[in-house]
Structure formats: structure tokens, C-alpha cells
Amino acid sequence: MTMHPTPDAARLQQAVAQLDAEMIDTLSAFVAARSPSGAEQPAADFLEARLQALGLDCERIVLDSDRIRSSPMFSCPCDPDGGRHNLLARHLPKEGGGRSVLFNGHLDVVPTGPEQLWSAPPFEPHVKDDWLFGRGAGDMKGGIVCALMAFKALRRLGLQPAGVVGFNAVLDEENTGNGTLATVHALQNTLARARLSDFDAVIIPEPFAETLMAAQVGVSWLFVTLTGRPAHVAYMGQGLNPIEAAHELMADLKLLEAEWNAPENRHPAFRDVAHPINFNLGRIEGGEWNSSVPCTCTLGLRCSYYPGTEPDAAVAQLSQRLRAKAQALNPALQVEISTRGHRSPGCVYDLEHPAMQALAQAHRAVNGRDAERLACTATTDGRHFSLMTDIPVTNYGPLARDIHGIDEAVSLASMRRVTLTLAHYLVNWCGVEPI
Ligand SMILES: [Zn+2]
Image (cartoon, rainbow, N blue to C red; front, side, top):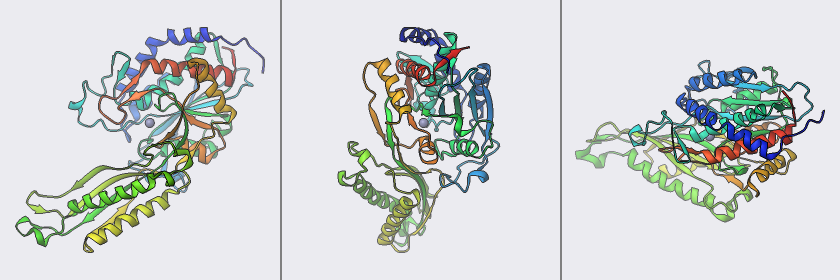
């Protein structure tokens, strides 16, 4: 690679500072392009226009479940494919010779909950103090904007990365991960112009407060339908109430959760995490009439487990526990268990790889101290790269608060630091060349 003078830290910082208003405007417009899982098109269109304006090679990777169904990483979809697509944009260097990186981020956001609980409408972003509020501001449009701004900061200095820089914006991260799976599959099977070999590293700017992700749990969704025996409440004793049974089943499942969390049962990567495993009763639906013992109750569960546990094995163990408890409560209680959504194995990230060490070094250059390492109690799309490819990967993104909650927000100061760290990374990992 021809050596070009690299910008010093002060010039990079200045370039990022000059992009501040653009960073806020871009994120605000991105958040306003609402993109619930299954209907991400407005955000995809918004980002596509921005990526094309940067002159990047931009292709759409259409989600085709039939193509990826045989992958061990496939999760049963929650929404129809419906022609939805990821965006994969690449900066292609002129002279080249540098190393490359792919920024992977998800477009979809989770439901807002009752909008009246929000201080302001969730898709009308606003800034207060250091925080930009809105659904998806933290998880994870803010991180995607950081990666974009890092790239733009170099452009402001008349430079561009000397290696390929990819931006992969995906759908369906929050419920299945099939979006990123579709891109990895397309890259592995020459179904896209880009190739997997284009990328020497993957960074996912999920909002984990500028930590380097060292490991993440596996996650599976289960849907449990209990069928009891309906009756007039006047003769309640003749009925069998599946909603009341659901309480007992959940209480029993929490005992299993406590078992998996016991220090002696923790995966080594989670040794210092107080409560790594969470079984969440996220949805419940049941009953027909206040004065009737209900017929059915359906629970939507999200359960986690350690890296190394196969999703199907975890689901089998959870199902067995649920069935055993139901049987103990009342053999007449019928239990049907199905899976849809996350079927996502956990993974451990190799932070000692030179590509990840370079990211750690960029963090140090900006912050004057080492990044903390995070054993994450949630899943991320990093698992696809970690388990399906040899490309080093981790998550590194800004500080956010109340993600998946009310008044979600991302810290602008943190976004500036992440942007600067990623700009350092582009300079030092990819190298630079004149535009
Ligand atoms: Zn996320």
C-alpha cells in the first residue's frame, strides 16, 4: 500500500466536531423513518438515499426465507418476507491495499408500548441535554449513524479508507436475526456483488456503552398454549383455569432460571455477571369472559442460555420443565409448545484478534483508557459472523438508555466518542488514501 500521511488525532476530532449538527439531523430523520420489525422499509429507503449520496456501491439483499431455511442459524420468521430487503453498501478504494471492515446494524425497532407514556411521541425525535430521544435512537440507529459519520469525517479531511468499508443494514434483528443471516448467506454463496472475503473485520455498533463485547447469551422464543376446562364461575370448581396455571408454570420456570444463574453453573465468560440468564414472560393472551373460567392462555416467552448450548437443546429442556409442572398441577391441563422468532445460539468473541485489538487501541486513543469488556445478557447479530465465518467480530456502540422501554434515548456525547473511535479505526485498520 502506498503510504499517505495519516491525520492526527486533533484533525480527526475537529472533523467529527464539524459533523455534529449533521449527526443529530441524520439520526433524527432516521428515527422518524419508523421501522418496526416486519415493516422496516421507511428506514431502509432513508438509509439507501444517504448511502447512495456518499457514492457507495449499494445493493439490496432481499430476504428469502426459503433460501436460508436449511441454515442451522435460521429462526422461524415472525413476519412474511414480503419482498423486504437489507442494504449492503460498500466503499471501494481507488488505490486499495488496505484492510477492510463491515459495519453491521439493524433497521428494525421494537414496539413503543403505549405512546401516552412517552414524554414526546416516540417517532418525533427531540434533543434534551445530552440525549436524543425516540424509539430506535439507541437501539440501534444511533450506532449506524456513528459509523456513517466516522466515514464522513475522513472525507472532510480529503481522505477515504484504503480498504473496503461496508455498511450492512438489516431487518428482523429484534425477532429472528434472519436479516443478517440473509446477508451472510448471500455473501457466502455469491448471490451478491460483495463477497465475504471483502471484509477483514465486522463491527456492530449496538448500544452497549462503548464496551467491547466478549460474549453473548443464546436466546430462544417459545409460545406456550395452555388449554384448561371452561366453566361458569358459579361452578368454578368444575373448571380448570389455564391462566392461573400459567402463573404456577412461570414460578416454576423461575426456579430453573435461578439454577442456570447459580455461580457454579455459569459459563466462564459470565462468571462475573450477577444474573446472566433471564426468562421473560413478554406476552400473555387468554380468557374470553370475566364470568367464565377461561379455555386457553398463551404465553410468549424469551429464554436465554449460555454459549455452547444448542438452541434446540435449551428449548427441549424448557419444554420438559413446563410439561412436567403442568402434569403435576393437573393432568387434564393441555400444553402445546411452539417456537417462532429467536432460535439464536450464544457465542464468545475473540477480542485478542488483531482486528479487535485495533478497535481496543482506537478506543484507548480517544478515551485514554481501556474499554471494558462486556458479557452480554442479550443476543446480537454478531453471532452470525462469529459462528458462521472466520471474520473477527464484536459489538461496540454508544451509550443509550431505556432501550425497549419508554423514552428511549442515546447519549450524543457518547455518539461523538464512538464516531471518533471508529474514525481512528478506519485510519489505523484500513489505512487512508486521498479521495
Ligand atoms: Zn439492537
